[in-house]
Image 1: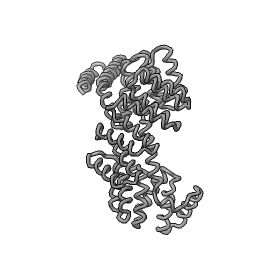
Image 2 (image 1 turned 180 degrees about the vertical axis):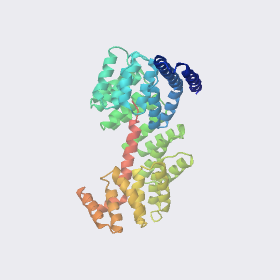
Image 3 (image 1 turned 30 degrees about the vertical axis):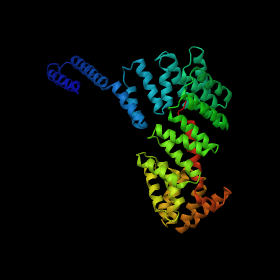
Image 4 (image 1 turned 90 degrees about the vertical axis):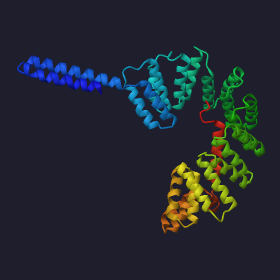
Length: 422
C-alpha cells in the first residue's frame, strides 16, 4: 500500500513537469518511457511484497488439514505465481499440490526441481507417491527401484513399493517388501498394517490374524492395531474376541469413532441390539459426531421397537445432517417416510440413493412404491422392470438389509486397509 502511494506522488510530480516538455516529441517519448518504467517497478515491488510465501504455506496447510481443497488450491496458485521461490519452497509447493489432489501439477513441479531437493530419497518418494495417486503403478515401481539403485530406501519408500506391488497383483513381491521392513524395524506400524491388508485382500485371514497378533505384541499401546485385530476377528466370526479388541482400542483412544462403531456393529451382529444401542448412545453423548453411529442406532431402535419408528427417523435426520451423502441413512429414512405416507419426502431420499447406487434393490422397490402411491404408474412400472432384471425378490428388499450389509463390509474393509497406510 505504501508503494502505491509513493507511486501516486511520483506521477503527480512528473505530470507537473509536463508543461516544460509538452512541445518536445522526444521529451514526451522519454517521459512515457520513464512513467512506464516506474509503474512496472512499483507494481513488481507490490507483487513481491504480497508474496508472503511462508505465511501462505501455513494457510494452505490449515485448509488442507480440513480437506478444503478448493480454497487451498487458490492459495497454492498464488504462491506459484511468486518470482522468489527457493528450490525448497518449490518442492514444498509441489507436495501441497499433491495433498490438494492436483497430482499432475505436483508432478510437473517436482520434475522442475533438482532430485537432491530436499534430498534424493524424499524427492524420489514424492514423485513415486504422486505417480501412485495418478494410478501409474508401473511408473511408481520404476521410480522406487531406480531410486534403490542410488540410495537406501526409507520406511516410506519400502511400504509404498509393497503397496504398489500389491496393486499390480504381485503379492509375493509385496510380501517381500513388508517382511524386509519388519526385519529392519520390528515396530513399523505401517509394515504391519500393510501386511494385514495384503493377506486380507487375498482372503488369507488366518495369516492376517497372525500378523495382527504380532503387531499387538510389538505395539501394545497403539489403538489402531487392536482395531485391526478386532476387525479380523469379526471377519472370521470371533465376535467376543473382537469386542475385547475394540474395547481396548476405546480405552486407549476414547475420542475415535471407528472402534465405537465397530464395537456396536459386533453387538448388532450377535443380535444384542440393546447393548449396541447403549454403546452407540454412549459414543454420541461423549461428543463423537459420526453419521454412521446415528444410522446404526436407528437400525437398533427398529429392531427393539419396530412399531414406533419416530425415534429412528430422528436419528436418521441427525445422520443425514452430518453426512448428506449417507446412502444407508437415506435409504432407511426413505422407506420409513414411505410407510408414514410421506411419499414426496421419501422420493427425495430414494432418488439420491439410486443416483449413487443404481442397482439398490431396496431403493428401486421403495421408489416404485412411492410413485405408485402418488399415482405415477408409468415411473413405477419402469422401476419395477429394472428391479425384475436384477432377478431379485421385490419384497426381500424392503428389509433394508442390503444397506446395512454394504456399510458393514465397507467399514470393516476401511479398518483393515487403513486408507493411507502406505
